[in-house]
Length: 55
Image 1 (cartoon, one colour):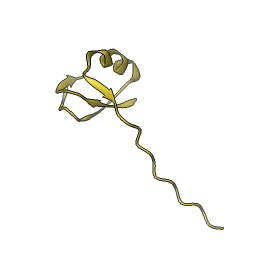
Image 2: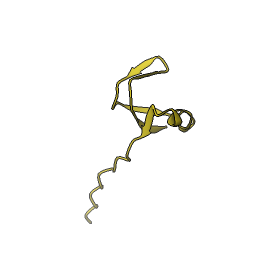
Image 3: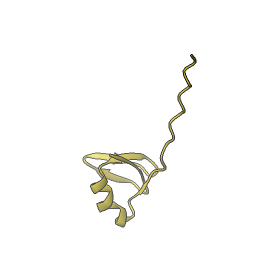
Image 4: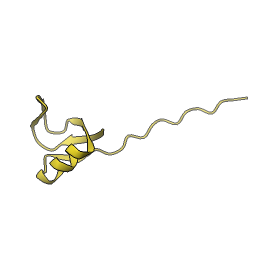
């Protein structure tokens, strides 16, 4: 599953997403929808670094 951003209002799998909403979908579904201009890939969220263990 990848994170995407809806570029306009759309309904996928029975759920409505507004413009700017984050939508999780399988890569194949993203590949099918990207040429339509309905979605764009969301930037990767960086995980916070874990503190080093002392000792």
